[in-house]
Each structure stands twice: as structure tokens, then as C-alpha cells.
Length: 390
Ligand code: FDA
Image (cartoon, rainbow, N blue to C red; front, side, top):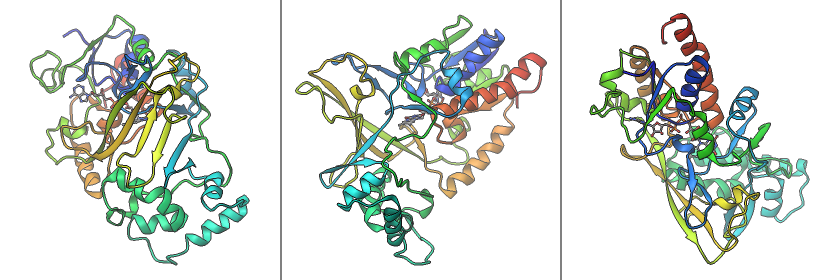
């Protein structure tokens, strides 16, 4: 076996581990990746008819306030000055998101100052008195009042979960974002931008080292190759970033996830479909949750002016063969996860990491930060000083 470390999955967690172990320690790393390309869900490629960069698994916006992560990612790519803004269509009218003073004043046809808007929303959110919210509807009303909840959150969330809001638990939401200024920047982080020459280029550069071998279209659980689970576990350290329930053959049951379906359309009758990168659709009469128009992520590029490419996004519960995207995290899931964690703790020299391996939604910067921490606290001490891999 030509590897000091096997990494399963080439998303940002796996790539960061591989990069550090090869570049910092000079060790040989084999990455096993089920898909035909590296990069996990952050992968992007050029749509051939328009030449526009498309994010294959849903729009990815890079943002962080973590200096260490920012310094790290800037070794492999520069970033554009892109700042994310989102709009939503409700009853045929477009409003800025997240809900802010502009949204409120447009919605109520008013000119409230911040204190007046706050007082109004406070009054509307007291409709249910002191009653403890028993479902998502009551929770939503108690957070932002019925008018805003019904317009911007109720049906959008129902579409995301394919569930009547009355049947969703109050616990899926702890706060609904409302800003009492006109600031409609989507993220509040110190650093934000998109990789100047694309995610594909960034992620490929991370592992540009002859010590790193990538085996694509190779499933860790397929025994026909030499880096399968049955052949490597116990003989060489493994960083596993696939689904934790799959690793243990679902013995404690399936963890539940939501997935998305993306319907791509190339439009040749217009160079600009919606004037912005992301438009949400808040109402039930539109079956998709949002439309992404990729040209707007890179206004600095010279894309063709007579064509454009969009993705309509549909959200649903994932079945076992679907791509798991967002952990649902019910009480039942948490109980199963606790059992999987116990099993994981006794797996010899296997580190479970990343979004799927820990059953946690992680933004890119969080996946990178977590991988850097794993490298510094476990893998470097292991390779330098012989410390155990746990
Ligand atoms: P990731 O899922 O990327 O990689 C895991 C890899 O393991 C995959 O490539 C998979 O094929 C592979 N694998 C699984 N099982 C395997 C097996 N048996 N054998 C071999 N390989 C296997 N973040 C952000 O900062 N800004 C954003 O805008 C977004 N947007 C966004 C949209 C959507 C729809 C999703 C689902 C996620 C985001 N994210 C995001 C989150 C971002 O995608 C996330 O941080 C990274 O995917 C985390 O990287 P990981 O390496 O943990 O997982």
C-alpha cells in the first residue's frame, strides 16, 4: 500500500487534510472519491454553451470571519469582491432579503423608522400571548408576527420541508432574521468573495503535489480496489468524510437528510434572466424554492450578453440513494447519532470528519477550520510523535 494516510471523500474537509499532510509533513496521501471529480459539493465547472461557471451542487458563496481560514484559502486562490444579496418574490412583488427595514416598509407601504418598525413587529408577535409555541407556525408568529411570517417564511419553509407548517416542530427554528436597518447584505462576515478563477481551479490547486493520489469513481465500500474499507481500516490511518451511518452499514438506522434537485436551463433569448444571482419564491403556487443565475456571481467576467444559465432549486426529503445535503436532526436522529459516535470512537485509527461524517451542516469555512484543527491536534502529533489517531 503506497499511502501513509487514506482520505475518503475529496470535499473541503478531505482536501484540507490531504494538503496539510502532504505539503507540511511530506507524507503520501491517497484520496478515494466516489464521484468523477474532486471538491465535494463545492465543485464548479463551465457550462459549455454559455461558458458560465456553474456550481454543480447548489450555489456556494465563500464567507468567513476566521483569520486563519482566510489566510489558508488565500494560499490557493484569490477572491473577487462579490457580496451576496438575495431577493424574494411574494405575490408577484420582489422584496429584499433577509427581512429588513426596506422589506418591512415595502410590505406595509410605510415609511417606518427603526423604532417604529420594531414596535410594530413586537406588537404583532404577541398575538399568541404567553402560550408556548407548539409548532413552527406558532413559533414563527411569536418571532416576527403573523403578516411577515405568512408572507416570507411559512410557505417557503413548507416547500423546503415538503410538510405543512403546522406539522413541523417549533424546534426547527430558533430565530427568524429581521434587521431594522436597510442593510440587505446576506452575510455579516469580515471576508467574503468568490474564487477569482473558480472553485474547480481553487480545489485542484490545493492538492497539486505528487505525494497526493486521487482515485475518482472509487467507492470506499467497493472491495474491488486496494483502498476499500475492508483493506485499509486497521492497517493505515483513515480520514472518513462520507456518511457516518453508511460506514456502519446503517446498523443504528438511517439518519435523515434533506436533498435538493437542480433543474438547469440554458436561455438563449436573453443575457439576463432575473438581474440578480438568487431569487427566492416565497409562495406555494411556484413549486421551486429559488432560482440561481450564475452569471451574476461574476460581474467582472466577460460572459456572453445574449445567453445565460439558471438553476431552479427544488427541496425534498432524501432517500438513501440521494445526495444527503442538510441534516434534519430530529430527536430520533440525535439518538441514532449518539450511538454512531460510540461506534466511531472504537474504530481503529479512523477519524470521522466533515459534514457527512459528523452529521452537521458545515459551511465551507467551518469544514476547513475543522480539518485544520484535526490536522493540528491529531494527525501532526501522530505522524511527528507517534501519538494515537484519536
Ligand atoms: P462534501 O460533501 O463536500 O464532500 C464529501 C465527499 O465525500 C463527496 O465528494 C462525496 O462524493 C465523498 N464520498 C461520500 N461517500 C463516499 C464513499 N463511500 N467513497 C468515496 N467517497 C465518498 N458552504 C458555504 O460556505 N457557502 C455556501 O454558499 C454553501 N452552499 C451550499 C449549498 C448546498 C446545496 C450544500 C449542500 C452545501 C453548501 N455549503 C455551502 C456547504 C459546503 O458544501 C460544505 O461546507 C462542504 O461540502 C463541506 O465539505 P465536506 O468535505 O465536509 O463534504
